[in-house]
Image (cartoon, rainbow, N blue to C red; front, side, top):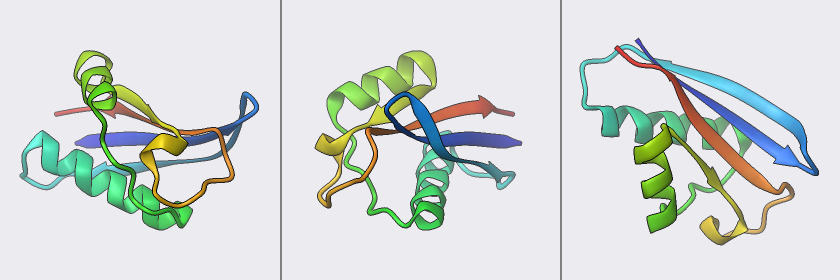
Length: 88
């Protein structure tokens, strides 16, 4: 089972969070992208752009933050954080 936890933060307060579970037989990368797409659908966001810093953070810590720089549209929160909390 693969689980990704996503949280919206503003002024050091969590506004929303959700956990996306995926038990399909796919690569880890596909599971991450599918989970992020589901999060964006649930939170009514455009999909963020993965910058080099996001990729490096995610590789190192299984976690990254998407700020205004990652979104084409304006956002009404400080950042969206995703974190892999379980992997098979």
